Length: 276
Image 1: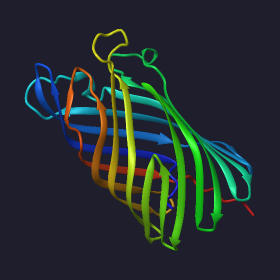
Image 2: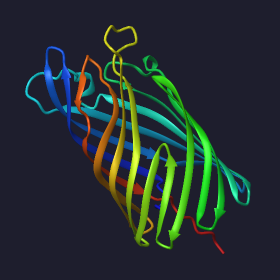
Image 3: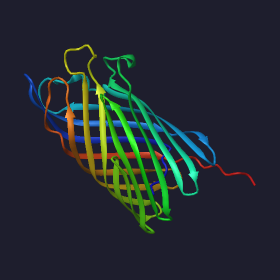
Image 4: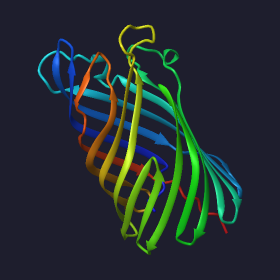
């Protein structure tokens, strides 16, 4: 398994996005993103563990085509998100757990809008997880997402270590990965992971569409390098496949899939040694 990440700092770079706008024509953009999160323990007992993770994200679409930018509200790092993650692990018996996850966020064009003008987005999931053997876990549950519209999806978890240094990690519909531990400090993955974003760009009473939304699947190879007991770096490169896009200012998606590179720098939880 990958090392625990107490503090995470992430940068994503995805060039070559093309949209066609009324009276402006086709425009090419590079999409960039910075993300920061810290996990804070709230409850830690034999039966219940609860973690809270405040996080911040900022994104921009950098214009690469000469001329005026038809979406200036989505440039200059104007797209920002303030969020809180809450994860809970409840031990039911020696081989089963109830796992719940919650994400609450406000995401939008915070150069022009206030947080009060931006609706709340949220995702809540609950999964029953059972350890079938030393090397196998299976889980079933459900997920509810409310970001522009309400979506309900089933959740399926399957983790299987078929060798001492290799395994399959699956948490559908979010992630599926093949893992190979090269050493205690080096891990490679072949994985696919869904990425969805919803930003409120214009006020709700504006005549122009006020919501930018996209759903992508990132597919590629990831290399995780642990740097002692302090932290590490995780680099992923591959292909970002766009499944759906809702663009503002009447933009029509032309080319929304392509190369994507993500770099994570993380710090592991501090270790406290008890005095003898």
